[in-house]
Image (cartoon, rainbow, N blue to C red; front, side, top):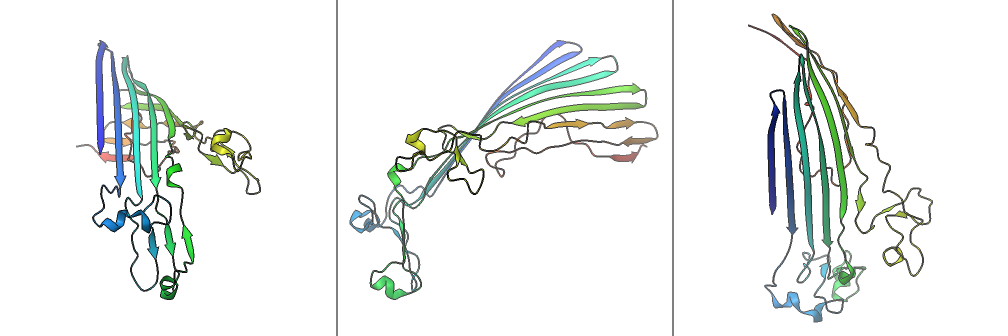
Length: 285
């Protein structure tokens, strides 16, 4: 399920100054394998379960196909919220056509993974082990103690661009953009970072013993960011030149950067500000 909303406000302050402001919201809510009822009554018979109060586990054994776990089975849910604000201004002063603006995007990613709450029983590669009830491994979790994650990140950006008509047949397009994203964090501190492989415990998003304690002992060395921020120096420049005559020549030089995000394969976001340029040459007729 997806919800998208946007508001835009344009205002003419004067014949040489125009402003455009936009507010947007994007929400995606995806649920996978969310069963609502059992077709076979045996799928919700707790007497077949390996955990108290849970139903039959998934069974892997040689000699027959996998037996799926009973109701409700594993489910996953991914909720993505994006709050966006953009503001762009356009100013003309003599031979200069200026464009400048900024953007803010607040991103929230809330995943929840209810993986095989009834457990998994494996009997290896021999049917005899299944017939004699000798599992080779048992896998399970405590489903009543599972909690989701709430990842948060904010992006800030600003830019200025000047289309300078230096000569009748020569235009300089000068631009500078800055864009950075904050370090990814989890709202409740449920995130860890093992800086060195030899460290006995990791750094965490919080030192709350209720969340990080291990058998009554501290589970974290201290509070620290999840990673060092590589985006704080993300300045990008754009210097194309336009020459008009019988031959149009547009060379361009640009610096670009990438940024970190909660999910690098998430939905493509809207690009704004300076548009990437490529050197091109064409003959005018």
